[in-house]
Amino acid sequence: MSVSVAIVGATGAVGEIMRRVLEERAFPLRTIKFLASPRSAGKTLSFQGKTYTVEPIRPEAFAGVDIVLSSTPASVSRESSPLAAQAGAVVIDNSSAWRMDPDVPLVVPEVNSDALRNIPKGIVANPNCSTIQMVVALKPLHDLARIKRVVVATYQASSGKGASGMLELDAQLAAVGRNEPVPPVKAHAAQLAGNVLPHDWKVGEEGYTEEEWKMVRETRKILGDESILVSPTTARVPVRIGHSEAINLEFLHPITPEQARAALRRAPGVVVLDEPSKGEVPLPLFAAGRDEVFVGRIRRDPTVPHGLNLWVVADNLRKGAATNAVQIAEVLVQRGWLRKETV
Image (cartoon, helix red, strand yellow):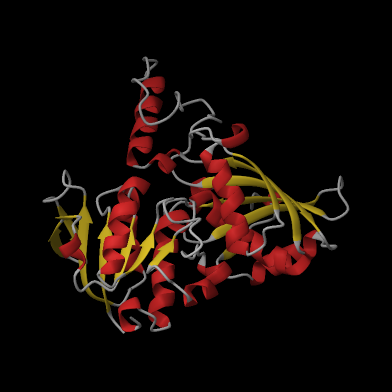
């Protein structure tokens, strides 16, 4: 079954990766169109050897579209995604606007693809990048021994701020290399080159950032278990692409590092790299451009009865955003479930 697709936010960093992933995975396209804000409308993009003109986001642009892959700010998504759904499309939305809506499934295909069997609003939410890679690693372990508590510290790439974040880091690194003053900071909370930023997101309840609350709430929703305790600390590091996470897990039942490795090796979308003495550990430099979630440094935590520590790395623009959205679309196509066929 071939489908008609629209990419909303096509000129952004994630939109660019969405185009690339659709080509790489030979997604069954009948037609495709690219939409963006009025200031980007009229630009041209290349896709599968053809040139396309970017259209403005407007209701009539969604006519005849089966699947929308959307990556826009939440404020834009709250307006554009319902318009697309009303036109009969299934919207896979990468913003934070719909993730905690009880009528919108929040999906990582390797973890909870069954949630796609019911899409009341015609919108599917793509989780936060840091949450996606974590739950891919947690799911097989949760099934094995039931997770009680997660303590996670993230080391997130500048591309989490989009193209502007990467450009800013590049400019800062170049200035530092020339022993010149860095340009004025705009994308990040402070200079990122040679630095670590634990405050690169808006602070919310109880002093936790919005990024940290996303990890708490989204993890519970995706794994379908509100009893899981999640204690996160997020930080931005001077890496262009690839988020890293140090994860401490406490389980309800016994689990050994050997059992964890075996379960993770069987898990879809996971690559275990756990030979530190041989240099085989997950690194963002080598995860960039890949769609898998890499897990290593798997070891026992002796401070609790049933505990493990993990190191988890993934490309935040691909598996953390674009690839996960395309994988959701692939599941919908494979199941023949398109909203306009059921209304």
